[in-house]
Amino acid sequence: MDTEAVRKAPLFAALDDNAAEALLSTMTRTKIARGQELFHEGEQGDSLYVITSGKVKLGRRSADGRENLLAILGEGEMLGELSLFDPGPRTATATAVADTALVGLSHPDMSAYLGTRPEVAMTMMSVLAARLRRTNEALGDLVFTDVPGRVAKALLDLSRRFGKPSDEGTLVEHDLTQEELAQLVGASRETVNKALADFSSRGWIRLEARAVTLLDIDRLQRRAR
Image (cartoon, rainbow, N blue to C red):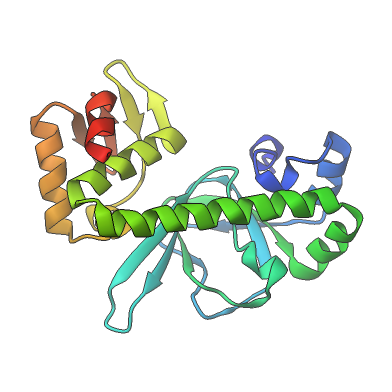
């Protein structure tokens, strides 16, 4: 188990090393391949997960088959935490976008642990509040920001979380298809591809296979406003 990766999760932020190791010992390991679901929207949820390697997308599907991506999560990030406070049907489908390893904690085990470590509960509430804030911001972007602006903002967000310095700028290996990137910004693939092509022609980005190199972050930041 990649203890260092798990320790990045907000769940462990309030714990010392001994307490973190004790909690880790109660968690179960899970591995899923790219394209495999961890859980499905509507299923009964009773566990949270921490990603130790790889990436997972959270999405919802409409009755006519259209999909909207709510988030892309990577190493050290949590998913399924709502089940700890409100066990019930999953509100989204979690699917690996790269080969992914996770550790899981059941609702009964976490409830017992929170009873002895209230500071962890406060940390978890902070995580949920941050998720709600991002959701509100995303809803505002859909109303007030055009598609190129949303694409620029999504690229910058992916860069902050998954970017690595390269000789020319910042390499972002997001592991998303063009369709998934379009779902993330809530637009058609054609419109998103047009925005990406425009950014590329201006020298702001260079497109790669399921990755992008950001060449001019300042211009992207101005376009995202």
